[in-house]
Image 1 (cartoon, rainbow, N blue to C red):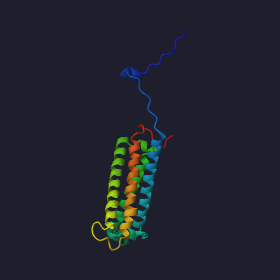
Image 2 (cartoon, helix red, strand yellow):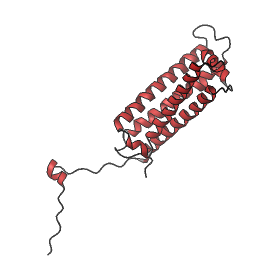
Image 3 (cartoon, rainbow, N blue to C red):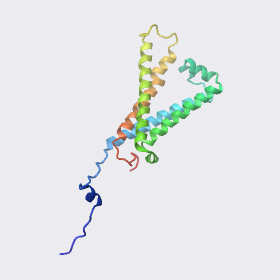
Image 4 (cartoon, one colour):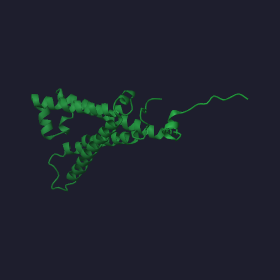
Length: 191
């Protein structure tokens, strides 16, 4: 009877325990990361496009914003253009943050700071959008006094612009939450 080759696992000798294989990541969890990340990236890119359009002088739908922001866009100063460019850049960074959760290039980033940043951004976007949707909706109902004389801009904020922030935050939060359960070094879109 021949001798079987003996394989010695150094980790077992050092720790005294046999490592368990990593549990497979469920397809549902990976799907939730993908939907959240790609959905939030799409909303961020679309929002960046709108901001860039207005920053470059476009006026379509500008009346739906109302107030000082509409005035800044209609009568731009160098400071207003710089503000618009910064807002556009921030939204593009938001898209990049979302994509970093699912793309292979995102694995080059430190995992915990990436997840913390995504979670913090999701909390800010969700809180900001949610608060403005609720308060704006209550204002449209006249809870804070008579409804605005021209409620068009407020309606657009409640049903589009602020809701957009809320949805962006919820999608980013979903991606970050479920990405935490994907083993380190595995991007959800690596098959």
